[in-house]
Image (cartoon, rainbow over all chains, first blue to last red; front, side, top):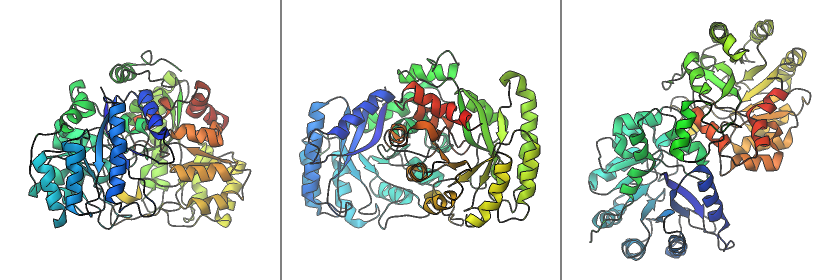
Length: 260
Length: 286
């Protein structure tokens, strides 16, 4: 079984038949990927980095439909904007994840992981034992103002040691990023990010262990097949490959039974 | 295309795991690879022998290779000559097996350095140099009609293709002490358009670079090594047809599986896959 833990698409109001979703399913079938973790971009006019609670609800409702239509094909993440008031985000978490079908939360670049305002959201995720996919990248150029790097994720992990974090973009975070999170057992890493550069997967497995590395493609900006090739670019035991391709994801995307 | 499994245990192993047919082309020509050492991180397959072994797993029957040290050394002659020698050695050991030389050298020319003609002369004396490569960003000069004109007079005379290397690695991941801008594709297209008789390869371009080149230039080919988006090969084939797409892994910087999988799972028909995997390269004389 193959699970891609980092896949994007946009639900567009102008596309009620969800043609992007159907294209994604075709790509999955062609590539042999059985299940993906869907992280939809909210469709917003103007500055896409700062969407409203209504935008989040609209995307969440689309995800609810997807999970009912394809119950075995997708994990689904609620992409939250942490600059919104925490009461809004926590209500959304309770409605769509704790009491709904979605699996977890995605955070991107709206607020850095070190920001103290993040704490009540992190607190809730930790208490509910909800998986969190958090974007991270060490960038020499083109860095966004509030974008987190791996040291920021490590800082969050220190303050919330039971918060289950999947740090995105192994190739973006690089070897420095792997070392940043190494001692934080609550942080896993996905293999996505950048071009099909050699050497990083082998390093991550060696440093973090096979239990903490998950296959992710960052589709549709990236080609799913190209990114899948990364998992076959390293010699490893089939049992190890199975963990990276599916077992670790199955374990990570479970929802806990915690409560606040 | 072969139903892989016949070709070797490695592909067979992937098929068994993915549980999907991997229609690995039976023959691939890799138009851009690199051998040597990179200053910023260790390349496990940077040695020619290891690179060859890795590429052969995927039916790559021939590879065009450039010396990595030419990127940063003060002048590229030493590394070009060193690669020539290494290629001669490895080819002499394997020539019987492949019926032809496995590696063809792609010397790097620095147009800002006054000995670049010597490198062309050395290359021409060999019968296996088909491409020369330019890296205006790392070698810190602008590609202009003036400096390209002289090179083109040589390359046209000797039937050489010119590769323009747009980048080596994602600029976001450059070492902070060494930020190198990508080669500007718009300026490049403008200059190349002045030489319609000369064949060019746009190497390691992102999707936008590839599209600009294929749209504006009839005499440019593009390698697929860094072109990525959903169904990228179908997109490029539909918009510009597959005639000017060339397979490349950009190994040893990239793992070859990335571009082998890109092609094998592209959904293109066999005819188009054959074009990208080797026919277009053969048409170019590679």
